[in-house]
Image (cartoon, rainbow, N blue to C red):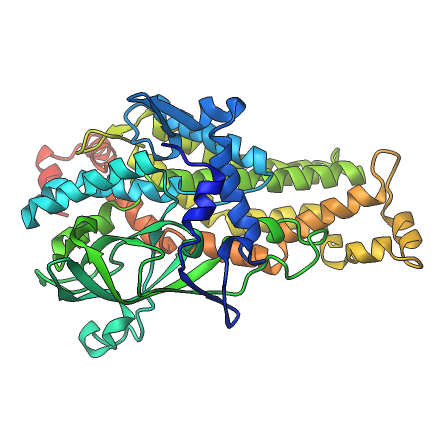
Length: 484
């Protein structure tokens, strides 16, 4: 059943070992670095129980209500409802968050698409993934995904490095497997569980490898340690950094120090063919919510830039309109790819409806690769005041406030406080440490750009263009059968 915010908070008070800034965290939900983003997740859970949101955030099955975020997609309407659920959440909280669960559960659907391959190893493993997909729907956990390993010196062969540089199996027991290593993961310190999967994609002829591992790890399990980067929340006045203080999604180095994974939580291990399948299909569903988040990021840039143009009376200038149009084209390009990927959705091997892969991956390349360009366009539209405006304290202090109110009041509709708020928001969106962090995160959250392009190459059907050129050039039909 759908959980409440209080149930979620109780769930992550499980004695987990969390460190940040050299401090061992006593209580994750109340710690200043985690409290704002944990409150966002708790609010999401509570929204599911409120009448005004229930139709968008939940669905009924078997007499119980479940989260739309975790509903396996079988129809186009399922995808549109997921979109509406994200819209309802982000509009309610007044910002953009990436890790809420819907963006990672799709990785397990991808694994289910390879169930036949898992059954080649052991039929139990295929059943395990089906059971976990059902449990996610029924128990409504905060489910995230363990991403990249530390890896170490990659000029050296895996066998020549410290084995703990990548997660691996060290022992089999009657109760399950024992694993060691580490993974970087966003939101792990305040999530319930993570899907741990391999990041090695360059196996050659190995049939088995201790690093070819896929499983579910409970984030409060014995031996799991969370070592977090320092947070942005609390680093400055929320009036000056409104986004960083509310929506910082804390990243964690999750250490697995001889952690027992029960057999029912194991999807595959020591089988490189399964690991290769996972890497090839990992994002066929999860790319959709990631790209969708960037649509809302584009909306924030457009809104901030347009407000500034109206404040300063520049919106009628052709040069300003052209730059705003660039932002709009970026935004609408993302939306077009998402809409088209649903309209031309494809049936997956497991019978789910996956977004059209070529269109979805092409949309991801557009959204991610053009984000730095669009952020700079927004900076140019808003101007240099986002980097020179004094703090909120100066706007309120005797001796400076009167001058700042004079120079930051534009007209009767735009007084100094609204001007200050827009500039503070824009700085945090485009220019702050938090903004730089978010930009880097977007570029690597679903692997780097060359992997995005590889996904486009592998998902695009080249037969149409090839046949068109063959006919236009009057070449023989046999050229279509030539190997690549």
